[in-house]
Image 1: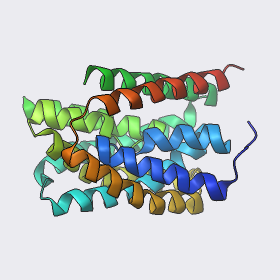
Image 2 (image 1 turned 90 degrees about the horizontal axis):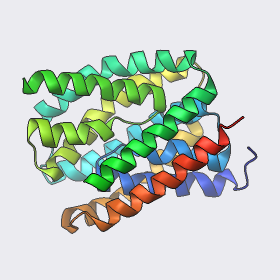
Image 3 (image 1 turned 90 degrees about the vertical axis):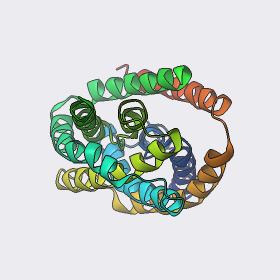
Image 4 (image 1 turned 180 degrees about the vertical axis):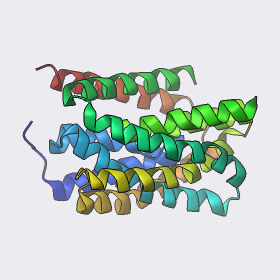
Length: 122
Length: 120
């Protein structure tokens, strides 16, 4: 897929959208960043997901700092879910390199549908 | 039992994070609010804290595979700060509902486009 929007415009726009939805829904913004990198800038699914992980580290840091000021972060609970997730992410990235791109993209699409359904249910 | 659920869901969130480049908040937020019992706002804030070590390890791993474009990541991450400010301001006094449904519709459209792009 060829890119129609220049990266100098698209990247900050993607960042803005990621930050906005990240803070609003408590997600890192990857759900926004990954599909936009693929559809707007023509990134491969692996590039998009790798770049997204690096980007949302910053996004989450900003979001957490904003909430942290409000004293809303429960650190022990963050460790409770975050610690096993660190092991999970190692397995996830490992598995990703071994899946065909097409399968990966279709699975990503399915994940977005699942997220949408969850948002509808509330 | 709560701890076991939290550990299993946390691990699953990590796998999703690594496979799809998301932070894991999709699972962290419901886990923290429904299983652990945090308030919605606290669950979202805590989810963001949990995401940081996960994506740090994930990005490090993806960098080894050659899948990270650092300059793009930095621009997206840096500009996201402005979006975060707007989002936090809204989240603290907006009752979710309409916005979540709009976002859900947006995701469905994006999902359809992605599936279409992978049709070959």
